[in-house]
Image 1 (cartoon, rainbow, N blue to C red):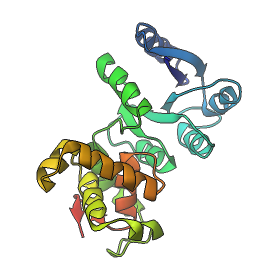
Image 2 (image 1 turned 180 degrees about the vertical axis):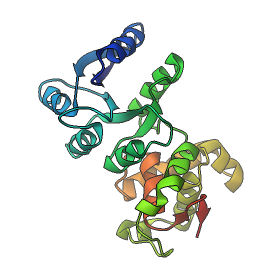
Image 3 (image 1 turned 90 degrees about the vertical axis):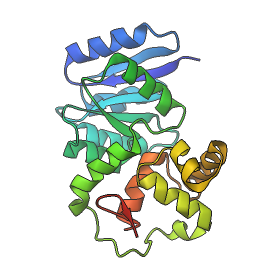
Image 4 (image 1 turned 180 degrees about the horizontal axis):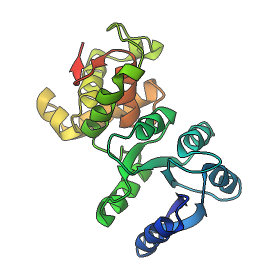
Length: 224
């Protein structure tokens, strides 16, 4: 089945460009478009969508609040935040609101397509190291971590799972974690899946955010 995508941007020209790129793919279909967050939420009431490409600066309802409302719904589609500037504070807010990642609007077509496929399969769509740089910049907006986990379910993690979580939060890929811990990449992927399940997180991006919020990782990617 084709990946069902909704394009949300107040600039019709940008939506047209994205639609042309996606329409050329046999495994993707643009099923809806919206010019602001309110229209996007309205569309979701009647149209099944797998991935939402969400702009942030829009009239009526911005992309951050729209993302928050969408991600709070049962069986919500994955949301990719589209931002004009790297390390934009709106991208940070979007991740906090539940987006699975963010990307620049001038992303090359191949990277855009890979990102959509990646998030549809349940993976993060930005390198954790990029997300970490974003959080490093805006870490003053996060609660002051004491090094003691405040998320009650972190205590449910095994020692190995907590170790993997810290490495994910520091920006390492599954392959890099496997090399660091002398494990197979498949084993690392299994650990990451269990971490997501135990902590009720959607993807690796939320692992990074949680690690910062609880103080497990400090600005600069240092674990405590």
